[in-house]
Image (cartoon, rainbow, N blue to C red; front, side, top):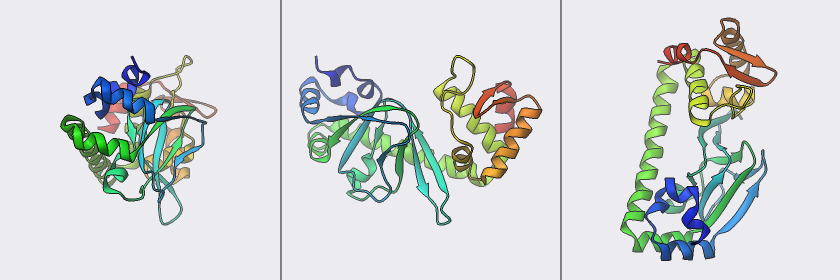
Length: 226
């Protein structure tokens, strides 16, 4: 059995529609990489010419705004794919992908993916569903940014980080974003984010231990977020 057949990416992505023969062929053409924390997987405006499979680790997808601020659009976890929209539209990527921790990823060339796209209807349907899901997330994020206060967005993001990525042994959030990254994720100035975190800390919602954040009252954060 090839490694691709046992990979977490296959279990949770559109690749689950591929048969054994297609997975063996995939294993023969893929390239595996280890990406260190802070390194770019690809940059905005780059032609990726294929898709990346995230086997281990988490990265951020972000866009540089006109004023030079880095706006985080999405956090990508193991089992997800990167670059599929740009590959199908044959356009340069409109986002940058940067590792938030050490990662293991595989790259599959566009020619191989498009060959499967033509021959395997279920795979092509799954891929389209994934892209549609990303668009829905983008719509939801846009609504949240326009209708919720910064306080509500921060509470929502802290809840999301714990429920999606879990905690460390000391109770702190496993994914530790910098204050600047957290501000970019909720669409506010870094100073405002720091001030709100301090307010949350004072009323016992969270505990700040250096750069780490420990959630102390998840239910109250959820109520604020809603």
